[in-house]
Length: 408
Image (cartoon, rainbow, N blue to C red; front, side, top):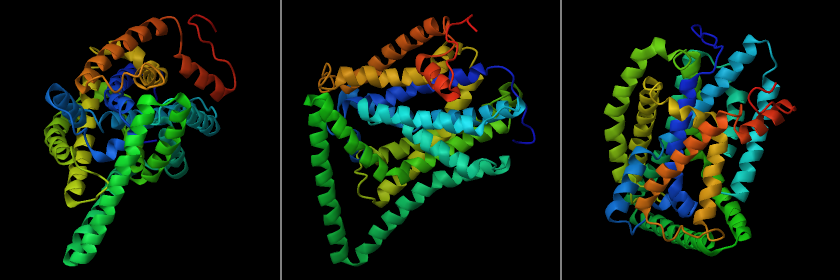
């Protein structure tokens, strides 16, 4: 722990508010991928969008995509640091309990990914957390943010190496033409794969969709180097925010959050807008210089904006206290989002995914999240944990935990 780290003895409600806020952003971004094949993410925006749908899609990509998973990842890393600190203060066993907790999260994630929706983040979080525990368990405070920066840079370096290598072949026109032809063929094959995935999603049975999710999982695994390192980086950044005492005692670090509110917006908005403009219609299977530049600007903008969002919500946490119950049962609410909307949008459910316009996703996400917040208030007034949180905690400690309030 850091030299200035102060122990915490009560629940930090501003972290619950942050989780609730991040939960809404996650739904906003995921909504597109409840209605569209996950692998289409490499082909950019839907080509037929116009009017209000185009505006909504563009704004979600610019202001939400890449920002809220970053915020949630920082909170995951912060949660790890808090659990370790509290166990250390109580001289309680930690590592065995935490590893069992991660293993259970991995199993929940695998079930979620195969049975419900391939865009699951729990598997990635659990695996990244295993890496964090294995390699960065004792990393000093001053190195945490430096390692985070290194993980942010890694996929960008790989993208630039690929883009520069392809650009260099222009000095050999025959080689360049051959490489571009191969990539064009791969892109067309990808389009055909995505068309089949869309057919299964819109018309297929639940069993066919399970098979498609296996293929989606293989696709995600094949591209892990581009999205796993940033998640690990945000984990470490979240730990740094806790062990440096900023997220445990925000009242004593108001200047830090005010500065990052300003810096995050000042730098994050133009960077992410420029990155979105370059990446919006780009085919990411072809690592051109434009794609590499777009990814760099977008990633940098996402880091700044995620820190801006974290700072804005932390500073306003008392006024946003109504989000706290949703954040307290974030796992249950996250799983409920994908359960409800895949059943609503997929062909084996109501099959509305192919008919709902893109602009409606924003409205539906707002309504659904408002209902989740209301339900979370009702539930947390009566119970200690969300339903999935209770199950997770009971299995972690190998003992049924008291669920109803007032019951010990």
